[in-house]
Image 1 (cartoon, rainbow, N blue to C red):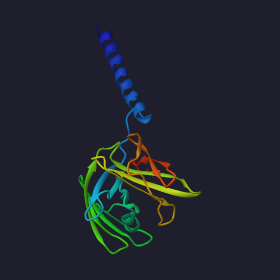
Image 2: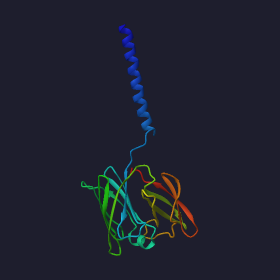
Image 3: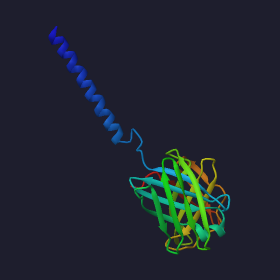
Length: 209
């Protein structure tokens, strides 16, 4: 009787150990998705309707992009920023041509101001969006006319789309950009650019690692 109980206990313990090992293996191999960063999307007050600010925060770091489908707004205001998050949730940066970005990420809220090259102070307010897209910040690299380009895009929760394509290391943009992307899946889409309708693939920014 004792031997039977001991054997059952041994078998049960082996089963538990096996299940734990299986869970750890699945997690390590992608059986469970990585948590990744948290994304927020904000609308810009007093700007073209398409203007958005998209930010991803993770482990004390942030990456943010301001963009729209309006060429004039993009020239004065569409810029990338990245850096460390302050202890109070503050994020800030200055572009090479002096566009000042300041914001605060707290709980599920994201707000702040942007002072552009025209001297305008624009405010923005937004909230967090579910991980995994489609609403989020996107980024892609490619070439156009023999030059390296960086594409940025933001998809809002209501499906609104904003994007710019910038020549690498320049404050100069490729135009026009189609008013809607070609969606490949929840994390990937193609942005149509230029007069000859070339496309550049942009990917969901879900981690800063």
